Length: 174
Image (cartoon, rainbow, N blue to C red; front, top):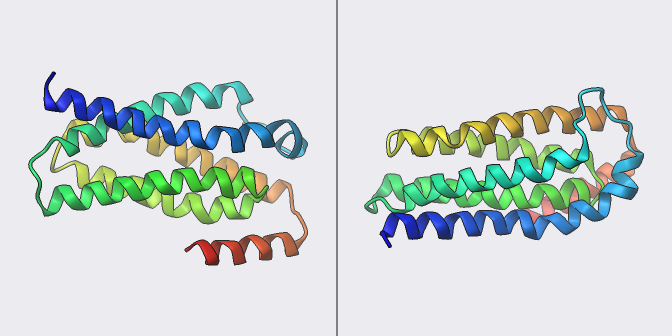
């Protein structure tokens, strides 16, 4: 088994684990809190999210495995740090949005997540065009998710106190 293949497989498993670990938070919120939200007309059906995220985590894993397999340098180390940080924010988004029932917390997380995904694309590109291109569907989906998150925030204005509570929690986390 080649080192590249092994690193890609491990990277896919780790990426998919983020989705698996955040799934219970999301699944528990869907029938209650999320079902009661007013949704925009472009809101996709709930069943689409699982397959899309599974596919995106696989692409992320392949991309990271390619970068991980490269000779270590300042550029590869920085690219790896960006990847791991965006993966962490990806997980935090589920906690913020679904776990805390807070569209504003979701926005507070998804905006830096989007920036980090873009930075991954830009950092990966000089190292591996393929690794960079594999992140483009992820950026597109998170762009859509950010618009959806913002729409849910606007359509479901909740008492300002709940946003203040989420804001204080965000400050405590970061």
